[in-house]
Structures are given as structure tokens and as C-alpha cells.
Image 1 (tube, rainbow, N blue to C red):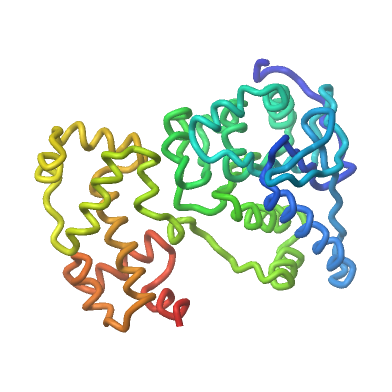
Image 2: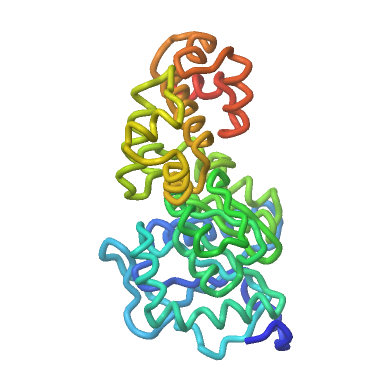
Length: 336
């Protein structure tokens, strides 16, 4: 389908179209419906327009979600015309690159790809969270854009779409008609963002307060360094060595020698597994240890900076704010 193809954009009957695939993450689907239902209940009190939505299955037959749950939904027509509703795709409940690849080759998702393309080419918008972001990639919708996804699959997304600027630290990224969100429960953040844009900040903020959803801008505080290796045992061993060596981390040349490979090969393996450079990986391990010490000890920030290999607290504060959008004091308050 060429970019020059013309589509007739249908005026919306609904504000949101929820596209649910077989095996979709049940919590993401439930969060979508709970957030929208809460918004519909609150809208009259706030004297704002009440949002409307429809739930569509990507294929005929019983719609089964993860963990044995099921859902009744109308089947999305294969001739569906693009419209002004926001098409929202909850996560696919796939957790590894191999599982993502296998899932994208199944009939319902293959059939969804041309519909997603026509929705965007026709002037509509689409949004996805977690592993569902890979469906947007398969449809060619991430090329030249910024996007996020579940953090441990971010390097895989970069491999599939080199022309996409993937930022695993961000919780939600909106780029033109495409909005993406991070892992599993970032779907709630995605829905609040879409509500804010579609229905206004007042309604979105009221829903967040009603459901006790805190504003979260980054996935970075939730990333576990050991899991960044994405199954790469060599990189997992490297992370363990870095953590054990704090605050005096050996040079990359020394670490590569200990692992019996060249420094260039080690850097390439780190980039492939984590999507980051060796220095970025080391810094992330340091910052995660600093956060753990802030939350579990009474050490001063200066002492914690020393424990993770920084010269002073100023450097630690600056780097934590850049990586986590939070200060050491904020992390200490969260722990108290």
C-alpha cells in the first residue's frame, strides 16, 4: 500500500477504538475499560463531554485474554475505514523476542497490519503499549519516529527498526499520530495521556485521582540491570561483576579480558543485548545501586555517592535526575 493511496476519513462515532488481540494482556484490557468507564462517570460532574468507545476483536470467534479470561467484542471488519477515533492496542502478553516474532506471524495480527496503515495514512491515530508496539513496527509506522516499549525488549525493537529512536526510559511517547507506552502497567499511563489529549486535562486528572494513578514519566526507576541482558549470559555475568566490584569498577579492557573476549566484542555484545554502550550500562548499574541504598539505608547522599563510585553528591543528583526524573531526596521519601 503506497503512501499516495487516498482514504476517506469517517467522522467518529466513538472517541476510542480498543483493538484486542487473542491472548492480549488481561490487565491492560481491564485497565483500559476501567479508566474509560471512570472517565464516563466523572464527565457529567465536571460538565465536560463524555468519552465513548468500542471494543473490537481482531478476528472472529471467542476472544480469550491472558490467564484464561475472556471478553465479548465485535469483530473489526477487514474493510474498516479509517476514522477520527484513537485506535488503542493493549499489550500482547509476549515477553521475549522469539515470542514476539512468532505472535506477529499469526493470522489476526497479519490482518490488522493494513488496517493500522490505512488508519494512519487516512489521518487517524493509533496507540499501543508493551509488546503491542511491535505490531506498529510491523506495519511500518515507527520508521523515522520516536517510540518506547517494554524496557527489556527495547534493544530488539531497535534492531528491527533502526530508523526509530527508541527510548526505553520513557513511559509514554507521542510522535504525531503514533503514541507508544512501556511495559504492562504503562498502559494506564497511555490511557491517561490519550484522555488528556482527547477529552482535556481536567477529566484525565480527575480519573487519575479517582483511581490513585500517580503521574509517572519514566520506566527507568523500574528497570532491573540483571534483566537488561535479555537472556545473554555473557552480559548478565558482566552486570554481576560490575555490581560486585562497586565502587571500584575495573576498566572495560580488564572486564573483557576476564571474560576471555576482546573489548570491541564485549562492547558489541552489550549494545546488542541492552541497546546501550558499555559506559551507559556501568552508569545505570551505579544509579540503581544508589537508589537501593537511598531506599534501604540511612547513609548520607555524599556517602552513597562514594559507595557507587561518584566523586560527590552533586554528580549523583544530576545523573539521577537525568535518568529517573527524580532526586535522591524523592527516592528517600518514597521509602519512608
